[in-house]
Length: 317
Ligand code: AKB
Image (tube, rainbow, N blue to C red; front, side):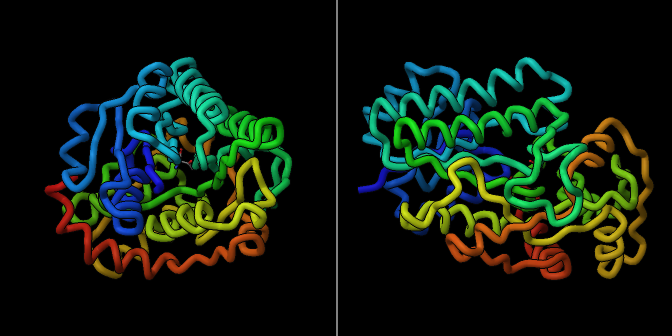
């Protein structure tokens, strides 16, 4: 039987992924974990363990005592936060992955999922339709850690047959958790401001186009990749994935359709430079070929869905 441990469960991706994993595999098969003990209250429907992913001894104990067969390793410091605490972010993002890959090798875990990011690309990478094997010149601590992490994943697969699978996510937009220190998180925040009747201050310029994805698409992609037959997985670093691309001005105009008095002003800060070096659109042909990836949501569909659902979640996040 599958027994799945999820690290960093309280984040945006974890919050929604755990709900879906419980639906698909049954609640008894899922263990949510997070360094923050208080995160337990988010997951009354499955087991929860407070866990520091840097603590190799405790992680190993949990894997052995709970008979864990798969780990979804989501704990990480995102791009904007990582620039504020570079050494801490590097240590957490890198060491925790290496700890887990070693444990996967030693304990012969069935599968590992680890999210990478469009942040692996940088100034020298093509901006449009950025390909699976495009040059990677990350210029953030987060991007460097993801780029190196991808190479470690590939290494553990090639040398130790660790079945690790990964997706280079664009900016993820969900309404079930608070944004967590990413450069693309403005696109989550803007919904909260529009709904509360406040004006929105954008830390990116109005025309800064970035690849984005609505959370249900990201969750579906994660499950599809993890369920794909092993022989279909031709990329062991990380798969490019795309859904939509938009600028702050475009999402603002979309929201203005629903909230005609909504206002925005642009006050770019250090995050502008991070975004300016990332791709504007992504080529995800390989994921389409290998495991039939297909996104469902575009900007208007996502906006409508969030506006309908976010009010019911405001007191839960
Ligand atoms: C971030 O902005 O740091 C993340 C990402 C693109 O990986 N959302």
